[in-house]
Length: 275
Image (cartoon, rainbow, N blue to C red; front, side):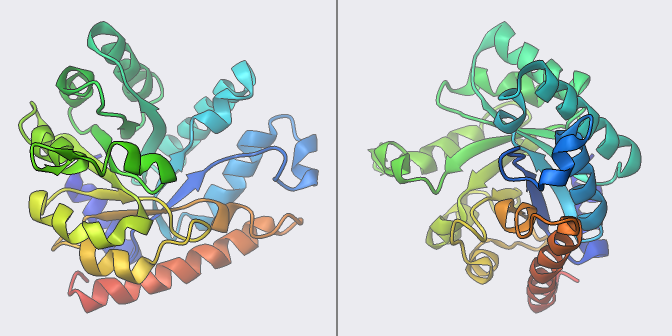
């Protein structure tokens, strides 16, 4: 996947929606639990019902690895299904890995070569040599945590370093790293007021925006402050889509929620002359 193909998907679907696959067996419909692989079966239903409106899918790795080897096997089936049936859809491993040297290289090989994800979320706390091994892979992307929406983000991200907020320093420094054009940034939707400043630092980068829906993020505000000439936004929704209904037609209800978000996104894309 490259930026041009991603932008083509945005224009074609008139959407910048990412569906987060945070699969909780305690929340999925009971009738799915009798399936041989309920995690995969649930994800497949969600993917098949929402792919017309989504330009990306983001499996949250913690929700798979919590089930041990079975969960990893389910993850492999999900990414293989996406790669074979919907190859033009951008895939994000929401893993938030962080390490250096050979360990970072092994993480990169695991998610980019073994699982064939297009991108992975990373914590930049350990610095340049914890990110650059992921940037060695052509048409693969490192999505680094910049400004998150959790309460604890104030502990580090919004403290001053060299006269600027630490999250700003992270973004500025990342632009100096090798193959920095392969970096995207995570910015929480509840921090939309900071997006204008972030756009001044990285006007052309894609931003992954979690926090729409259940976490209270405002899609219109995010679009106003974060959109660039090629959209530049991947806005994630997880619970709002996955768990809107737990009956036999849960996938139809998921599609309806995805359509609602896609329609808002379409209007924003038209407003900013993107489509």
